[in-house]
Length: 139
Image (cartoon, helix red, strand yellow):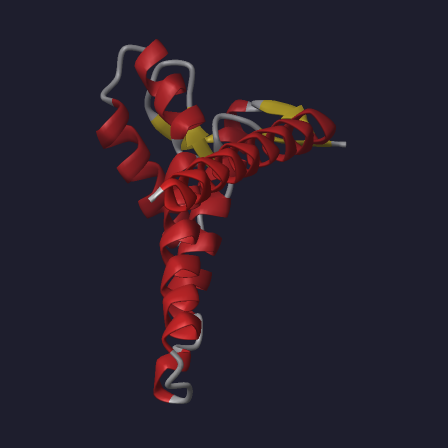
């Protein structure tokens, strides 16, 4: 199975994850325990950070084409917010319809990349937690 390339998948995921993080029900109005409130805020921040990290691939595509990564990714996300889900970074660095350009990639490759990147990020977080925990024990 194939999907549209040029960072379409990542841009769509960014929009969906940001929307999910923004609409996550705020439990602070219902729960007064500090750790539950903190966990909800941490979840939102982690979701936003993960969404932002997904823009790395479209940024690299834009830079490799000689375009401004910040402008191209901002425009790409704007298109996806408007429902143009087949838009991505074209080989010339512009944000274009990948369906029209017939830019495609394998779904299995994309899923594998996202899975491995997420696993790597989780491992880094676990290592960081171990280091922080060890420092707390030393104090």
